[in-house]
Image (cartoon, rainbow, N blue to C red; front, side, top):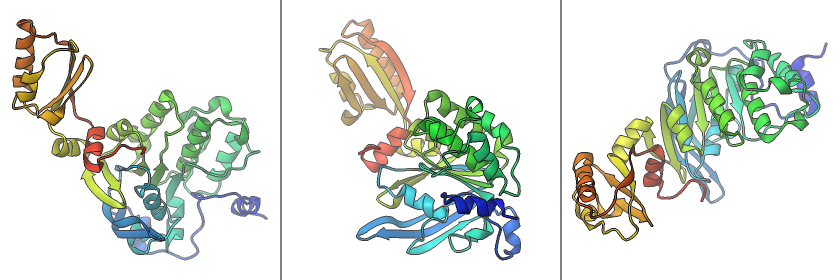
Length: 341
């Protein structure tokens, strides 16, 4: 009798993330919940003269959503592929659920889920068929039908893979990564093809405390709002180095304290008093025609200056808003460049 695993292999499809039966008994700790879900120490990877990773070190805890942020070419995909067991580093260690990867990945393959940006799937199978196929090789998988509803593919249940749109394929890859009820979930830019509704739906899946079930999630993303909303902690990676790490609020407080004041005024308004005001540094004040943005560490005195100018009729202050700095501000501060450069 041909096994499900053999049928998948015979079809010749790329099956990264599918469970494989362990070929050898693992250590006692393999079945236990480790105190640290992922441990990376001094990880180094090169491609010729390019140093993709230059000693990256971090830990991810059980139940944590850990984000890896960085510009294109920063080393994000290389890092996550090493953790998934797809690449080998030149030096350093990568430990997932107490097991060194990729050397002993077979011991935990059925306990991790992977959603890559591009996955080769059997194009003539339907959404329901491919999910059932994947579920059959995981020892702890549940019925795949609830997952179809969870990712919003109910109407595409009987649709063949090759007829799905980019966003629908992305939702399917997330469902495939979840079908084995993994303890660690790797998501490489999971919402890059999704519309706002699809993005929010995936956020709800990842944030639902009942669905998380102490699952550790490691994701890469180019969406700063997404990282700020989802991640318990993030690491900002650039040119192979981790430049900053912590919770979004910790990073904002450390690198970009204070508030941002935004308002509109006359294009010819003299804002010299704002520039000279001690709480607003010259480089933190910008304007485009009638729109003004000022960063301040002393909100109340800065507001008093603006309100006095308005009451005295020296210039108008309209559409006034006060905002906190964001993770995007931190990213630009730390890396000195924008995401897609």
